[in-house]
Structure formats: structure tokens, C-alpha cells
Length: 113
Image (cartoon, rainbow, N blue to C red; front, side, top):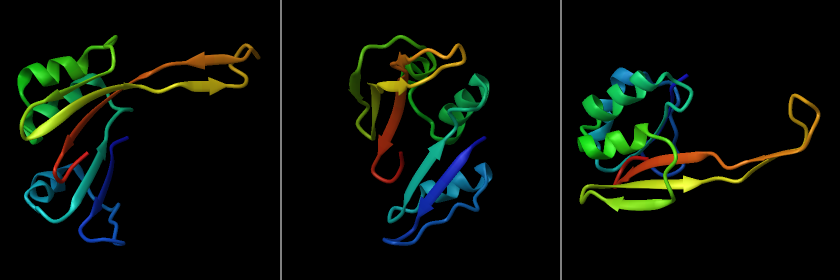
């Protein structure tokens, strides 16, 4: 599922948006756009990063690969950030405690995350 949150002004939020709305929202220099496609197939994410956001091909290639160390790459108009999030699961499918450290890849611009 693709989740889109757009805040045109402070204390105002829209969640009724489609992926087709994103290019026009990116031209609004006052609002803030949040787009999450982490549950989508890899090719859907790649298409969004390359065609809608027009991110540099090397940044997109990095985002599509796993196993990065945490880092921040400055691409002038946006940052590419790799983080590790610690997750504690009290009881997994086998009934055991578990910890995970999934990778989180984020592109941050002046008006989008």
C-alpha cells in the first residue's frame, strides 16, 4: 500500500491522495509531502524514485540495495539518508523474544520526505 500524507499549511493534512497527485504536489513550495511505499514491490518503488522524483540513478540504486551502514549523502537538492531502526519483538512466531535492526532509506528534500 502506498501511503501519502500532504500538509499544505500548518495544522492541515490530506490523506485522500493518489500517486498521480504527487507530481503536482512536488511543485507546491509551501507544503510538505510524505510518501511511504515500503510495502510495495521493489519495481514500484524504483519507478516512483526514478520517474516521479527524478532522483539521481546512483541514489536510487543505493536505495534499492540492502545492507548499508548508516549514512547521509548530500545530492544538493535532497539528502539520501540510511538509518538502522532497532525493533524489539516480545514474541515472534515461534514464541521467542527477538530483536531486529531493519534498514530505513529516506530521501529528504525541502518539501518532501
